[in-house]
Amino acid sequence: VVVAAEDRVAQVRVRANSFVERVAVQQTGVAVGAGEVLAWVFSPQVLQAQQEWIAAMGWTGAMSDERLASRAREGLLLLGVDPRELAVIERTREPLRAVPLRAPMRGVVMRREAVLGMYATPETLLYEVAALDRVWATASVDVRDLPRVRRGTPATLRLEGATREASVTWVEPVASLETRTARVRVELANPDGALRPGAVGTLELRATQPEGGDTLRVPRDAVIDTGAAQYVFVDRGGGVFEPRAVRLGDLDPDGYAVREGLRAGEAVVTRGAFLLDAESRLRATLSRAGGAP
Image 1 (cartoon, rainbow, N blue to C red):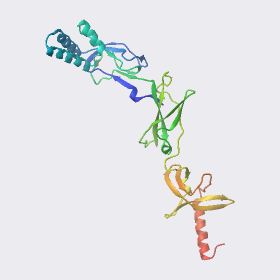
Image 2: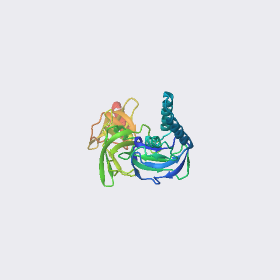
Image 3: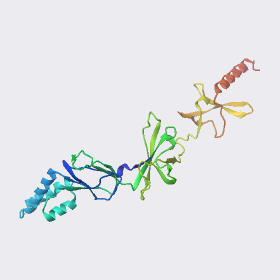
Image 4: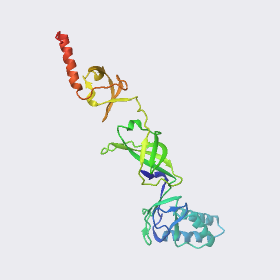
């Protein structure tokens, strides 16, 4: 799934209780430039702060008056008034009744909550803007494959007939108990905006050999565990089965990882291994007793 990069998303809120007096961007999906006006809001607190700054600028002579005017201007900046509006106020010496809310970055409007006449507080989300020149693609990986996936693992995103090359930048540290999967993420440049959040494709990972050298796995029911050792029956052909001691690693739904004792390509007995083991023990017992056939 393609999603907007979380570090490229910005929320637009007021910093003082306000009323939305005009809405410029009225729908989601609209591309906006950095500094573009999204809406205009009226705030009694901001209006009063403007009037205090204008009054302070009218006082002359004393150094303390200059500091007062500077502090009043700084207060307006802290209330979210853009320097472009401050330049207009300073030139005209007139307060702005409605102050513009501007887009903090170039991107696409992902959420729009601003409605004409609504009352907004600093907790109210008015807009959410996402820069889509760089996006993320996430996929779910089964826990048994996670040991072979790490940061830097090469990946290919196949989406709508096109392919994009990338590499894994993040592997979720906690797997889901319900699905037994964990998410992985790749980062993709998207200068043309062709990768749209919400699009679904296929992410192919060129997984590497897991750390520790686990290259072979055998089914769980192929392993005979005597308590002192573990071994499997290797099919030598012609009905001959060789008991082979092995050193095993981790166990997952595919079986045990084999660290020593087997080579790639050797066939082992799975179902019925316990019957072969029982026959082998019987023959060994009979042999020691001198009664082997």
